[in-house]
Amino acid sequence: MSNFIQTLNDAWQRTHSLLCVGLDPEPSKFPGALAGRPDAIFDFCRTIVDATAPYASSFKPQIAYFAAHRAEDQLEQLIAHIHAKHPGLPVILDAKRGDIGSTAEQYAREAFERYQADAVTVNPYMGFDSIQPYLAHEGKGVIVLCRTSNAGGSDLQFLETGGRPLYQVVAQLAADKWNASGQLALVVGATFPKEIEVVRGIVGDMPLLIPGIGAQGGDVEATVNAGRTANGTGMLINSSRAIIYAGKGDDFAQAAAQAAMETRDRINAFR
Image (cartoon, rainbow, N blue to C red; front, side, top):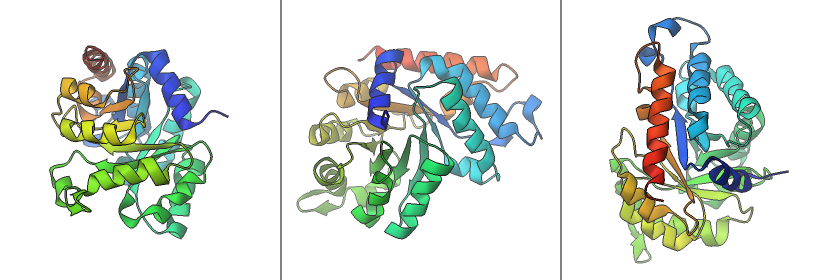
């Protein structure tokens, strides 16, 4: 059975892409043809996935955008569709879960058994016993928030502890103590390329999920230079809104494909 890290490495090599397409469906932004349809969220996301898959190495659905519209069943359908039609492209459930062990067990079951995600994002604020239940699912990826792309991340992540910022402590723990399964990765925002470089130095070749290059304005060249591994991979560089809402009309799929291709090529230019 292949595991998340192996699948990800294979995808990077096979697709020659580091692009992760984020799926944040907001029905108010859908083209008119989908308006009012009960399965609009699935149809929109499926169409985006099929259009952008040639240029992506992973997909990242954000669970809140489905749950807020009572569309969890459409999220299940979507992940099943990606696995069936685009095998080998890992699906990361962006849920940012963080709770005590017994509750984390249920969140892990939700991510890996109900939704069949290949990896899930988690919040390490409650410590290792809140992450451990996810690691019990063999072969599944656990992506730990480290240095997030939002401005307020600095409120806590830059607090000094033991003479260095908290985000560096999280990176060190992930690299040295928490990665017993070998399936850990870290979230580090593209809005902070200097910190990407610091984290890369701490964790070696551990994969980094890097949001923030699209609507949040992160610099692609600085991101790639800071985060790539020796073989030019090591990053899931995520873009969501800038790709999925590239077009407003009935040609939204073609617009998304064009935006995905251009983003992939921009990333590759600096690898």
